[in-house]
Amino acid sequence: MGTLIKAAGAAVISAVIGTALKKNSPAMSLLLAIAAAGAVLTMTAGAAVSALSFFIKLANASGMSGLELGTLGKTVVIALISKFASGVCQDAGQSAAASAAETLGAVTALVAALPLFESVYKMAEELI
Image 1 (cartoon, rainbow, N blue to C red):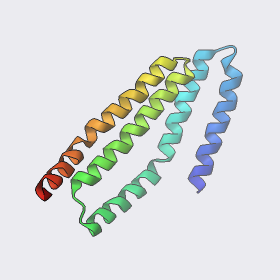
Image 2 (image 1 turned 60 degrees about the vertical axis):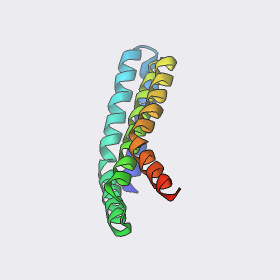
Image 3 (image 1 turned 90 degrees about the vertical axis):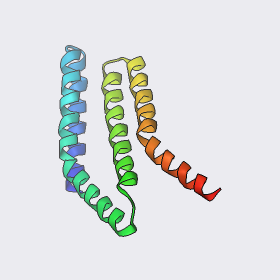
Image 4 (image 1 turned 120 degrees about the horizontal axis):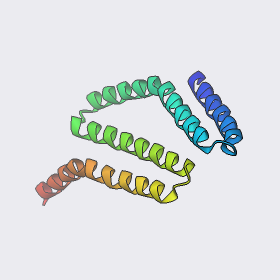
């Protein structure tokens, strides 16, 4: 909870400063936004490690294979990266690039999930 409050505070402060800078120095405002986003992401790394260790324990207890857990992890990372890239593009005023980043994220997530879909297909094929 403390990390959330610190990260939210850093994001709000950088947004206020960035808004003040945007009029006279849009490039500095964009760099501030990127730096603040990097700082917030760094703050959340500890929580991400905790969540990952929980999911590993859950997978081991439930008998999940590494395929399912790996696919879940890859998909989450792809979503976060594409969301971050889209946000940076939107802050820079490049909505077309933001849309492209989001589309690329969706397609990449589908490609990352193909082994899981293949596994489900093989299971269905065995039932028939």
